[in-house]
Length: 291
Ligand code: AMP
Ligand code: ZN
Ligand code: FE
Ligand code: FE
Image (cartoon, rainbow, N blue to C red; front, side):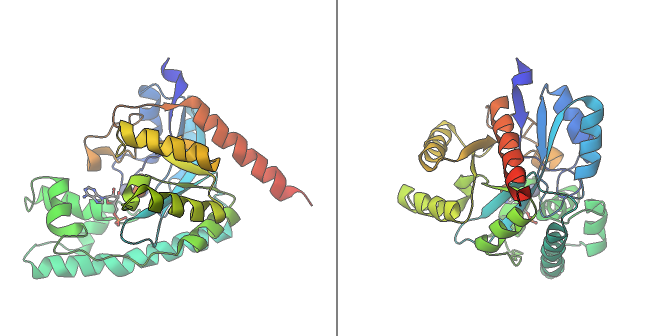
């Protein structure tokens, strides 16, 4: 039954997705999901619209955020589930993360201009619709103007780590990200472990162990970048470290055309994983309120 399925990782126009928060919720409904967590990069700007639409359409909803941390050589993304949208800690954090983007994005544009690509920051801001500006917005413009023939090519040629106009943004150390998610009332979950690009399983287990020591409560087992072998591996690691399993598509609308909401590389995410996360969030809140 489709009602048994959920999606715990997706993006809206509040960051670099192409559907408005309410539209993501409507699509979740159409795709037969019973619950959703919105996890925009560095912002909770889409949460209230999504929560209102979810309440209207009878979809269970969990607020979330996705934060990039310092971790070389790969990428460490932390999901924060159940964060309190009113939290001042969260507001300070998101402001700082957006400042780091505001510092990086004009550098990318300047470099592209040097490479004879005609693109302006004003166009990029228009593309983002006033939300958090990410590289997929720049990629969409490069595609529309014919400089590349796909979003993938925009990353390969210009925006990705090996691209000619690559600039990293300042990231926060994992310790700080865990602490800030906790203080915002959220539960930290390690997103798409495959993107850590660890050399071997020992190194992966060591990073997860370090994260557990910092307060990690879950591992994203199902994700669009995870094949069957990886799903099995991360599932075993979650069990080994006593972590909750989570999963999501990492839906971005037409910025990632091949990903549909609710389906991650052919897999669906079981409803029980959402329920366990909500149950855990409730338990932590009760603990926090104890005198
Ligand atoms: P930013 O947050 O601005 O650094 O951009 C990160 C976004 O770019 C995330 O949504 C990634 O999934 C997306 N991204 C990173 N590398 C690629 C790639 N090679 N192809 C398509 N999207 C990518
Ligand atoms: Zn994104
Ligand atoms: Fe991510
Ligand atoms: Fe994501």
